[in-house]
Each structure stands twice: as C-alpha cells, then as structure tokens.
Length: 104
Image (cartoon, rainbow, N blue to C red; front, side, top):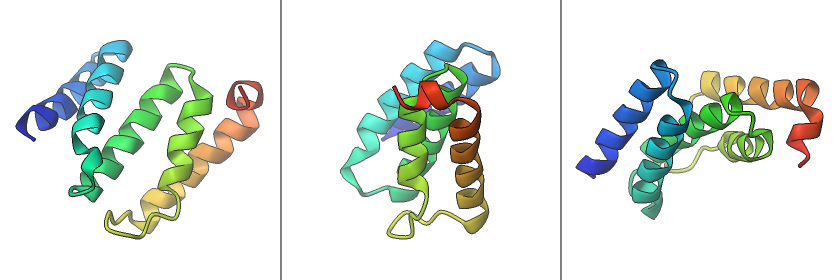
C-alpha cells in the first residue's frame, strides 16, 4: 500500500510538472494495487485522476468510460454530489466537444 500511495503522489507531481505519460504510468500502477476493493474511496480518487489524465492525453474513449463508472457511485466508495456533478460535466464536455475520439 505504501508503494501505491507514493505512486499516486508521484502521479500528481508529474501531472503538475506536465509530464503526462509519467503521471499516467503512476496512476495506473497505483490503481492496480488498489483494485482489490478494500479502499473504495481511494480507488475512486485514482479513477478520477486517471480519467482526467487520459482526457489531457486525448484518450477520450477510455476517459469517458472511467467517468461513467464514477457517476452514480454510492456504494463503499463515497463520491460526493459535487464530485459526481463534475464527472457528469466532464462526460458532457467529452461527448459534445470530442465526439469522434469518444466513439473510437
């Protein structure tokens, strides 16, 4: 878990330094560790960070899939209404502005 936490923090640092591919690698590594279901809130945080990262990389089809999984998440990993509204807004933006890339 400590490794995954450091990968998450590294992903945020790489993203702020505009090292998009390194950030993507860090987020996916951390997501792999937390996929077992014990850390639902962190798993949702990683999904949203990865979706945003994929959006910035132009990978709209995968980004829209991750955002769609986050909308309506009320089970073990609580996602606030404000965050869900943000996810819906991102989904709408992708569908309206990047239709061809989203349907790939």
